[in-house]
Length: 106
Image (cartoon, rainbow, N blue to C red):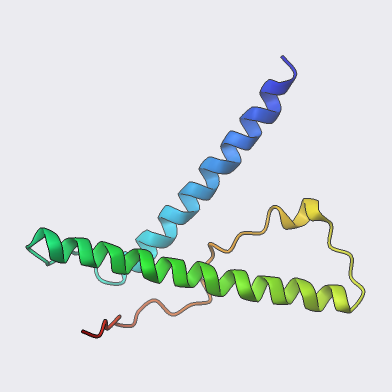
């Protein structure tokens, strides 16, 4: 069937994005030495929610600045085809210092 190749590529792209998101979460979690010291379920749930919040903030930050970079390039007359942009992902974190401590106020 002709559509099998396209479907397979779309599925693989989705899996790659999911894996990239998991790698980002592991990177944030690893800098906390990969340990959850909280004993209560509620505390563990709060820590997991905090991890999701930090990861979402990183993705949001990257999305905003990728958009600004694309806008800047377009204002300079550069043509950026949609086929190229669909391969750009906000899941990168190499430019972000993850070794800090996240303090959540009460």
